Image: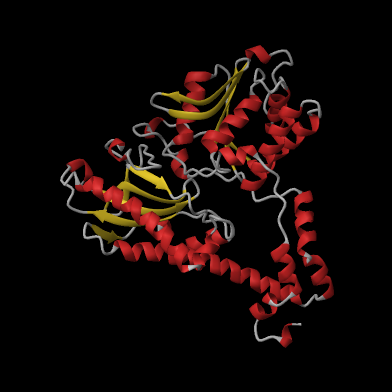
Length: 422
């Protein structure tokens, strides 16, 4: 078929397959959780949902069943069937000097601690500190520490390092890696199969949360996949024209490259405009792996949430505590596409040393111990190509210009506040 056309793109745009794909509308049932929360929000969605299910006294009415099935999957000791009153579940529990633990389940003299790392970066000595929480503050019996990620990946050396000042007397964390892809997904499927149709409220909640977990793990139900495949006519087309499989594979690669190129164009446009700001000087990021470059853009286009930043030193700030403040443009798994302020010395990131309250007037402002402030640019999902917040729309000059202005608007607000400190 391709021989009649001059290029892959010409064939595709004129094909019946393209027309069918244009008319196909992927089925996506309404999901109230996705309306209220980002699918990647581990703090407000995933940790509370998992904790709610693990609590035998939760208003889901499932008693010990979710906890028992979860512990069975982990190979952990199972509490007595009548022990629901003796089980305590803690979410985001704070221990001074050790940090905030995502999930703790205490039962019959035992405990498990779960560090939920859907996308956020590891913190310094985090698992080591949580091991100390298990050993010293919670559990009379040996407890279990679990590191929960999308795919069961290992924690970084930073997370397992000794806490500051304890290098000589450090017990390495004894952790187990678990994943959303297998452990959480399989657990939810098991629970749904056990919930009766009469218990519709809980069943719908579980089904909607399962949809969210499938989304963040890049999976789809077979039913949804087969429906979309049927609408597209792709299988029938390839059966009739098997030689077009290579053409479609090439087109898929081209879409990925276009996705990456549009992200690159966006960042380059922002960078070029910021060069005209007299108070900013572009600097190199000392962490080479954290630079925004083509490898980061192509990773996002391929479904991998790579991390990268652009750095600009802010000049002429008289407050000594702000002498090393830098403006950043970043991409990462936790906040997607963002603008922020942080402290850097010779390109090396430093912990935050002053309050970020002065930036509280900026809509979307966040602050913590590492960053003076940051704002997530919610108008863009760097992982999505289509849709109202997808990268594909940046091929239109006006859409690109509008998003660049949105980013620059946040940058100017930061600089105006810092200018008052000069």
